[in-house]
Amino acid sequence: MEPVQGFDVQRMPLGLTARELAQDEMILRAAIEQDPTNVQNHLTLGKTYYWHGQIDEAIDSFQRALQIDDRDPAAFYHLGICHFRAARFTQAEKALAKAIALHPRFVMAHYWLGITAYHQGKYEEALGCFETICRESPESMIAHYHAALACMSMGNWALVRQHLEILRENGNTSTRVFLYLGRAYRRMNRPTEAIQVLRKGLSLYPRDELLKEALAELTDVQDP
Image 1 (cartoon, rainbow, N blue to C red):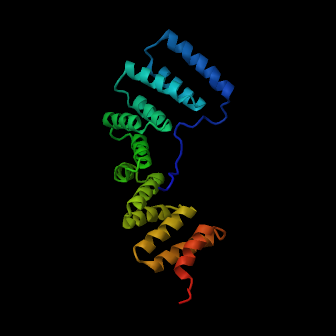
Image 2: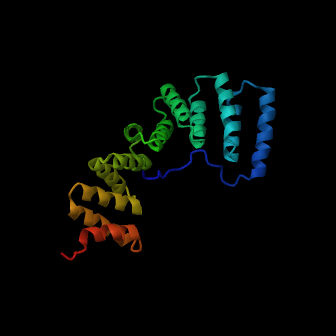
Image 3: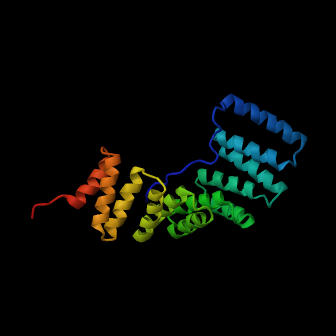
């Protein structure tokens, strides 16, 4: 299974030190003591714990937020990501699916549900999530990339080509786009296009060994 490339939507804010995070935690705890029913404070505290790597504490904060408002899609979303980080994929799926049920156009919830499904080998489910994003936010290139990965895992090379060509048309010139696109054309029995794509990739990344190997497999003359 190809490792998923992605980004962490809850990454630590730039420039924020551990000491500053600890101070924020203290402030938020004090605010919660004054008003235990403020959902936003529980959510912010949960994200603060997440940035510290304290996943169980983050989960507890998001669950407390849901005890106050069990129809808050953001709380389910953050809870789902925490379960994913803890490799509790079933719980992650349930939380993210709930976020989507409450907010059907919650693009990032679809994204993480797709990532969760992909990591469990549920490629058709993952593809469904990523294609939903492609329809709702066609400018989301990362959704097209992950859709291509899911299609590769299923051997649907025509769809791999379709999603990767969209990336290329929109200026994505990463080595993996060229490598996987070349592989797709080869599996579709279109060697000429495969060679063209791989040569284009090598013109941009002349030292990339994987691109060299893929091209050599198509162009080297072997002894009988």
